[in-house]
Amino acid sequence: MLSAALATLVFCAPGYPGVAGDAQPFLDQFVTAVEATAGWPAGSLGGIYDPTEEGGLAKLGGPDAALAFVPYPFFVEHAAQLHLTPLAEADVTSVGTQQRWSLVAKKGRTNGPASLVGVTILSVAGYAPNFVKHVALQGWELPADVKIESTAQILSALRRAAAGEPIAALLDQTQAAALPSLPFASMLEVVRESAQLPVAVIAVVDSRLPAARARTLQQGLLKMAHAAGGADSLRALQLNGFVQPQLPPYTATP
Image 1 (cartoon, rainbow, N blue to C red):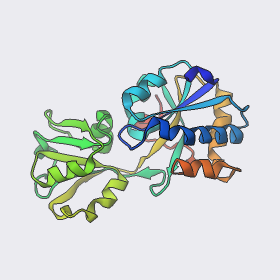
Image 2 (cartoon, one colour):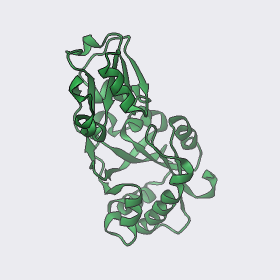
Image 3 (cartoon, rainbow, N blue to C red):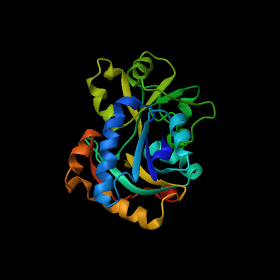
Image 4 (cartoon, rainbow, N blue to C red):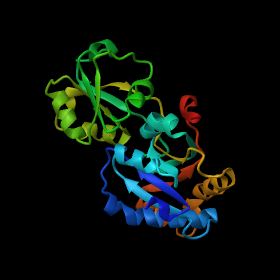
């Protein structure tokens, strides 16, 4: 329960594979390692995982939910609502600290935003329409009737787009890298690519962590990769470590 610790880190990754019960042991290992590297007393940091946006928001509303560990689209969508202040960016295994997002459509179908009239954009980040419209597709004025929807079934979305349905798919870097291997890849094309954007962020929620504790936690996160036991706990969550936050200006401050 959130009240079982002085401060709780809520790990929420909508759209990505994961079951709360399966992830919890790895998250427990992680928060124990964070306590050690930050110099916090044992048991002063708890962790809880939720794979859904709705569930994550509910948990982050709890009074002990002092920290959020979330994908960047979630941060963009909810930073103002939750008063999120970034502490560190995650260095994700096989991705890094930043990634580009790619909008993919049937080859020849799209030559600019105006040609997306009537199209549905499907993405693992579809729960975050502000991220999709104003960050990943920054500079494109999408038609008013474009729909943005969340899906974890990106392969199905790409297959539908290739078949000619009014579908486009916004892919993260890992998904885009796998695109050429698809048997119908020749029927698709990347029509828009984002700037380099953070992958995931750990942030303080609504100033629930005093500044001094936040600083020690940040210092602990930054040195985790080189601390005893830190690398193992990071590897279990497919992380290499953490770096200082360098978020784009429009999301750097809640």
